[in-house]
Image (cartoon, rainbow, N blue to C red; front, side, top):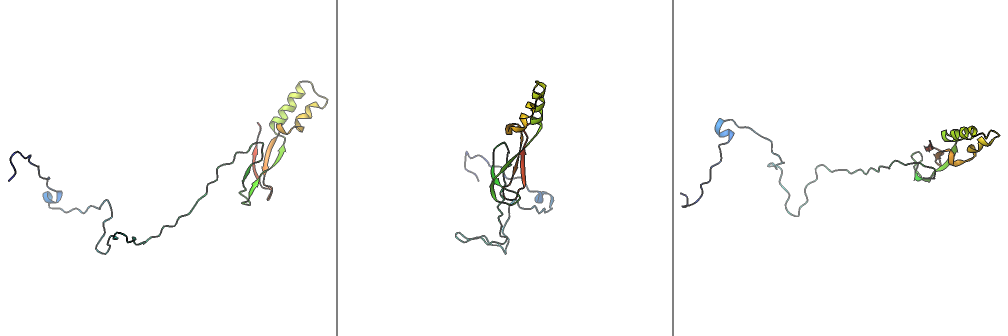
Length: 139
């Protein structure tokens, strides 16, 4: 019997097994220890059945090559290096030569752009193994 003025609490609806007589075995959403598996007590370490191995992976950021030497790790010889620069005539050099030629400087002045490193493309190589690491194209 309930106390006077108490709010009646509805009973839970019957389960699927109670209404149909069929038992359904649903998996648990979390692992439940079985009879052979006892949970660890406080202060006792859990048994390590599957040790986890940790592998450290270093990801190198892509190197941007410009007209200055770059300090980096050479992917070929795996040494810390400062790149060696070499200059090659590129599209900007040839366009500058043509521009000077069109201005009327035909007496050899149009060859001046081939003497200026600031107009040439730059190749970065490793000083240890001479591997080509990257290039900087001016145009």
